Length: 153
Image 1 (cartoon, rainbow, N blue to C red):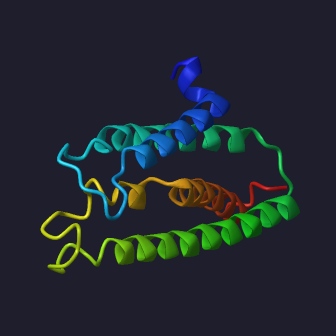
Image 2 (image 1 turned 135 degrees about the horizontal axis):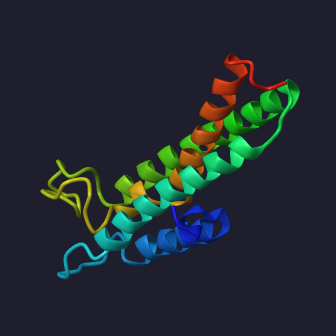
């Protein structure tokens, strides 16, 4: 990997920029657009950035010299953040679907006959909650793995 793709600060900032771009190019409920799904481009790039940041985070976690107590604390806090981000994501998706008039199967919905990935729902997949959930999941798995393997001192 190059210096760019292993620098967690640069990757974190790029993730934030692409979360913003996905939001910027996602059609708001009530708006009409004939341009197609312009948000698909930053959405695809943001998924790649999420993965690259996750790999960089994992590399940084491997460098830490932690005792067992610290591993348990990090695991507990990560699980709480994972729970929080999951609840917030579910609430966000529920509100978005309600604002759009229902799911794609409801005739009165703004996204009727579209699939779930469309110009009105890009932010369901890439947002701050999914970013937080993805990275806390990586941290949880890493800490749990090393606690089970007794690599934490």
